Amino acid sequence: MRTRYLRGIGLMVALASGLLLSCGDKEPASQPASGKKLFGVVFQTMNNPFFVDLNAGMLEVIQSHGDELVTLDSQFNSLKQKNDISDLILKGVSALFINPVNWEGIKGSLLQAKEKGVPSIVVDAPVKDDELVLCQVASDNVEAGRLAARALQKVRPDAQIVILHHSVNKACIDRVEGFKEELAKFPEMRILDIQEGHGTTEGGRPVMRDLLGRFPEINAVFPINDPSALGAISALESAGKLKDVTVVSVDGSPEAIAAIKAGKLHSTSAQSPREIGRVAAEKAYDFLAGKPVDKT
Amino acid sequence: MNDNDASPVIFLRRIFPLLVAMAALLGIFQVWVPNFLSAANMIDLAQQISVNAILAFGMTLTILIGGIDLSVGAVIALVGTVTVAILSLGGGEPQTFFQFMVALFSGLGVALLFGGFNGICASKTGIPPFIITLATMQVARGCALRFNEGRPMPVPDSQQLYLSLGNGRLFEFLPVPVVIMLIIFVAMALLLHKTQFGRHLFAIGGNRTAAWLSGIPLLRRETVVYMICAVLAGVAGMIHSAQLYSAEPASGAGFELNAIAAVVVGGTSFTGGIGSMHGTLLGAVIIGILDKGLNQAGVHFSLQYVTKGVVILGAVYLDVLRQRKG
Image (cartoon, each protein chain N blue to C red):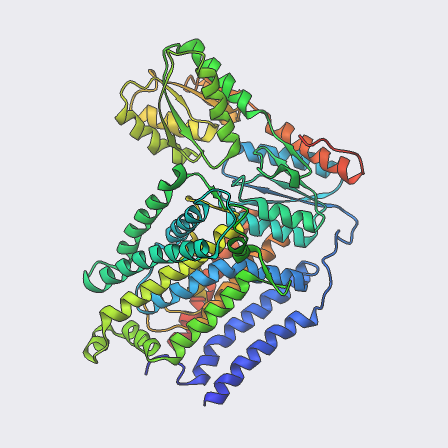
């Protein structure tokens, strides 16, 4: 009985190793046989219209060359992002576009891409180890934060502000930095608290509701991006406080513009995700054509 | 009587469909994706599933005794942050082996604390393990978020030994996480299928009252099961943070669900009493192949979720059908 059991295991092992050996040491082809180039992009989340638009901009350029783009969604999960990236690298993409979940944690993936000779281009949110990447294409998030602060100052010079942060993301860290920097010029404007809203509508809503309970004097919110602004607006509406509180955001998504038209959102410092996507894709083609590419 | 390894025929019959499913998936993706079966891609697959497989090994034990552990995802984050916090003490000084060991054991100690608490509560209070571990999940997550205001903490570059847990390669070939996964697999398979302790777990999962009446020390067995589960989550947390070069207090959310998926696809019964470590390993492999294959085939990510859901449901339904027959 016992030996049969062991033989069963032996068979399993033989089967598994046979699979490994029979396919030998072939390296993955660097390009699909058809001669089409393949590109991959990994977004921290696709639950934000900003990235959907960015992807569309990229797709526009890549399809105009007759090439292919694979888009993957990391769902704010750094480990999934790492796995997604290594799948794309081993599939043999010509270039990789990365929108990191964790601007430090992405290092392992960047090292892997570099080792395999795949150029990586960082889009929207920067990475810490920028010497590992070909270039970073992002809007100036510090400036976006400053613009939001200035817009707020014009309507609420005495603003009592709360911030809904998304603190693992460098782009959001920069926005808050710029926002605070600008606020420092206006001592009457005060930040009551900074809470984690995770940059999503469903994350922003409950946090905003709690903040309203804690600080009745709130009259302004900086929710760092449009999805979380929509969450804040929904919390303000249900508390009947939308009239007394000014919401300023960053992104410029169609949903946010609709909210501005409806008088719910004061302003959103527009960034142009489509343009970021387009520029990033063009940089990849420049590099593959052997042209020099600037770091930023 | 119970579903132990007493009968290798039953054992093989249980494992065989999983092997077929695995081979079929590998075949499909090899046709669909050129070079899917290349050595580099397969080693990468092993590396990708390592964290989930290690979690799933522990989860198998808890599900086998009729329990569950939802706190493992949060424990991953907590152990990662505790360990990296200790490694970061003393700034950029070169690492000492002593500091490495202190960090390692503090991390695992925290995991043991949570596991022990889960186990004692599950055994003694009569609160369902689902609720207990749902609560400790919140506690562990909260503790993790206390570190560094919830922001990721980088692992200092001087801690090469720790970083190699996630990124090193044995003989320049086999990734260290895979080696750790295989060692844990062998140890857990022996523990579950070759010891009295393992037989007791099958008995507890089969019929808890009968197990108690036949003199099996329920409290001790159940506590140890939850402790093993938490410690394995701790090991996974260390690998995870080393792979990411940083400990993320917010990471690990939802990892428990992936581990549970591997366990049930691997044929462990959700009501306890039936299951095997081999099945769980194959379950983790199958889910890994699916993730990798769909990614590399360029399937839109929305359809990937749908496919994964359908496969999990189908695999478990087939298993249910087979058990009804046999």
